[in-house]
Image (cartoon, rainbow, N blue to C red; front, top):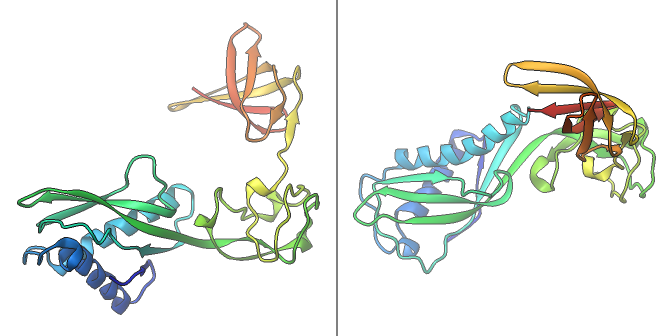
Length: 253
């Protein structure tokens, strides 16, 4: 069984047909499935399956504010030892705890057939968007300046954490690791900022469903970017929040 098969969100019609044909081979016949698929498992049915797999990744990109990202999905191979019964309806799903992007697995569930089954198929989901990349190799400890990076299309799913897309979020920050030329600049590459010290009075914005309250509280530990800070209000109430700026904390209730 040949692999990988690639589906691109901006692919031409011929490329989409290749994806559908590949899925038809994977889900309809061949040694991996034991016997020929019934006529009901048409190319149009499997086209819908392929579209749903891609839509999972596109929806995730949209929630991250990356609706214009270019999505590519590489489909791996099922275990050739599997002998699965013909199926009239196959539904894809994302197994709990698995990421939508990068190297992951997509579940395939037979919901209509003589013998129902449930398997997973390896896939690699690439999410391409414009972001900052290094102009040259940079050692750890470098304080970033505008001349250190440029903009290019990168695979957001190639490593944990979203790349940084705006120069203002990188200039003046310090690298905590060495980066090769052309590397995407990610939040994890930068030294975490401390926005305030323990004992300082901070502005607290508490956010709920349709409402927002602003108050002040004492920070009980340093306000380090990406870490939880404990707070005590004037009334003695204990809160936990996320440092978001200079003496500023966001609390979700």
